[in-house]
Every structure is written in C-alpha cells, then in structure tokens.
Length: 212
Image (tube, rainbow, N blue to C red; front, side, top):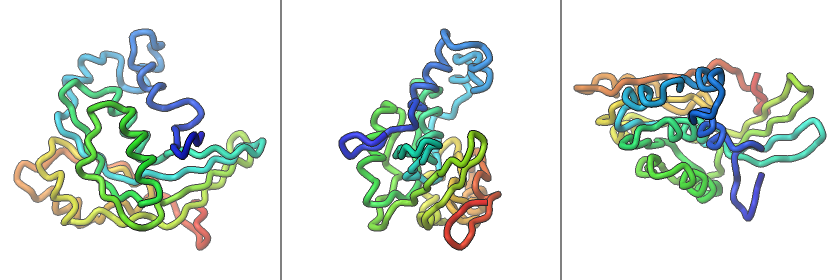
C-alpha cells in the first residue's frame, strides 16, 4: 500500500516472499517452485552481470470488497526474486524508461533489495509512467486497464548492456524493446545469453486500454 508517497509491493511483499522461499526454513515444495532447492548451486550458475529489461508498472488493485491498493508491479517482481537468489558478486541492472512521476518511488523500492541492484541503466523521462488498474470481478477473474507504454528500448539503448553476461527481457507491456534491438545485441561478438519472456506480448489491448 502507499505510505508517505512511497509505493510498496503487493499486500505481502514479494521480496520477503522470495527470501523466505530461498531460506532453509521454506517448504521443499515452495523452494522447488522457485528453482531454489539447492541455493548454492543456483548461485554458482548465476551470471555475474545480468541486465533486466522491461517496465515498472504503477499498479492500482481494486479488490472484491472495493479496497484500492497501490503497488509497484511489472519489472519490480523480476528484480525482487533475482536479488534474493543472486550470488554475492552478482549485479542486476534494470534497463528501462521510468516516468518522472514514479521515478523516486521506484528508486526507493529498489534500494530495499540490497546492493545487487544497480541503477546505472535506468532512464528517467518527463512523461507519466505506465499505470495499470486491476479490477477483480471474482476470485478467479479480473479486468486489466493499462495506460500507454513507455518508450521501447532501442538499438542505441541496448549498447549499455552488450558486455553483460546475460539479458532478461520481460515484455511487461508487450512493447518494452524493439525487435531490431534484440537482433542487434545477438550480432555482437561474445553476445550475452538472452532470455525472452513474451508476457503481455501475447495479449491484445482494446481501444480504451483493456487487456484481453
């Protein structure tokens, strides 16, 4: 929920959930679901420099009982889990555009994830950040209404992470990165490993912003 102008994660903070899941006290089933049954092995396989592409989302959740909960969604969740699983010498670099109206809240939330998260590739822009309203209609169903996406990562932008060990591109809005930027990245000598999550690229968006 929103406190003193700063947005938190969902009602149960996802970073805390990840830390619990990765601890030895977590149930084996939960740890397996996160791929963290052997945390030492997970750390040994993790790249030293990992770029994370996508969009931080300004979420408003309207529950069945009409509560309004404001949260940071989208790329924040990817970074929270990665920070909890990261080896001591791993650094995470979000590469994205963040609206001026949301930048301070994002920086505050990321600072709580620890020193793994480096902000050198984040781009602050003078426009409203992408916002999504999630309206729950039942325990199983909801509507998602989105505002326009942030600018896509371009070939020029992608150069900042060309020397990283790996790149995770999470298409939070479906338009987070230009295809030619990914193609250009893969032509580089010693190109990083690229993992692409299609996410909202598989969804349509109606004229008023409703995802379907």
